[in-house]
Length: 177
Image 1 (cartoon, helix red, strand yellow):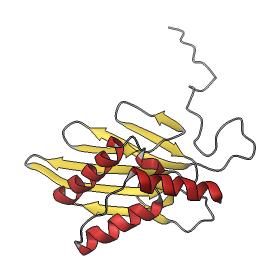
Image 2: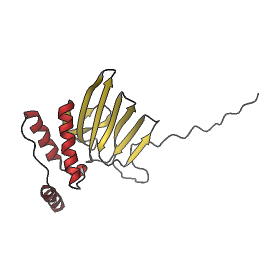
Image 3: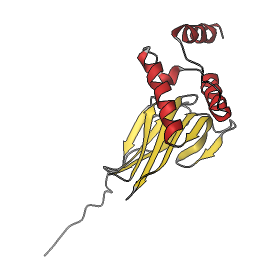
Image 4: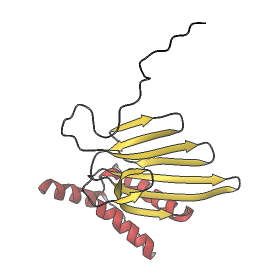
């Protein structure tokens, strides 16, 4: 039996280092995502990746431009139920920026909010839902609001509401810069 093998390698997805076709584009922040039925979910709650690469049915990588805000949720279970809930709101940056090292986020990100546990994660998901109910994309909410939520949550103080007026003021201030 005479079998011939192709000399050309299999097509692999292009790297997420930069956006193709842009000579001076900034490097992307790569966020690993995964899914394993009834055991493990690592997914985006909000954020606008500029590119997603799927490796297989269970794994993918999302690429974010610098200063993009996104939320990643980690859910883990065993035979007896949920063992871990974790919610992180992060802001991507440039390689020269000060960033935290976060597993699955390369080269890193600014951690705006981090919470664990069923009750706290559900509380934050309700806040995100309330923001979306006002037709505001959570990725456009200012980083200061996410930091305030994190601090108030840690101190067990009442969490501030995010209103349309507050969002309009943020957008107006950003336009003046």
